[in-house]
Image (cartoon, rainbow, N blue to C red; front, side):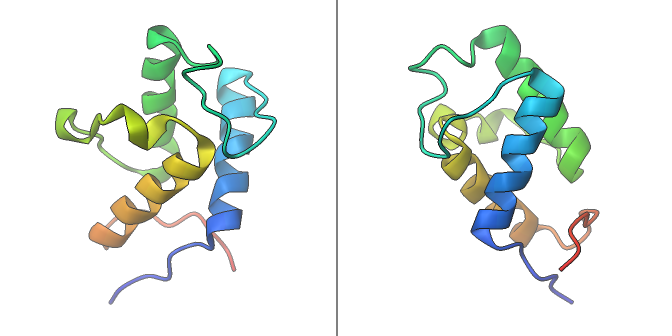
Length: 96
C-alpha cells in the first residue's frame, strides 16, 4: 500500500525546522540558494545528509548527490518527497 506523501508546504516547514535544529541554520525563504549564500559548505553538507537520513529513514547514495536537489529547501522537499514515494518501507513521521 502506498503511503500518503506530505503536502509540499508541510515538508518544507519540516525541513526548515530540521536545518535550524540540527545545523543552526535559519532559512529566510524556502527558495534561497543555500550554496550561493554560503549557508551550506562541504562540511555542513555532510551534516545535512546525516540529518536527512536520520529524520526520514533514507539512505542517500552517491547517485543521489546531485547538488541541485539540495540547493534550497523547496528543491530538497521535492527530492525527499520523491524518495518517500519510491520506497514504501520508509518510516513515516508525519501526522495529518
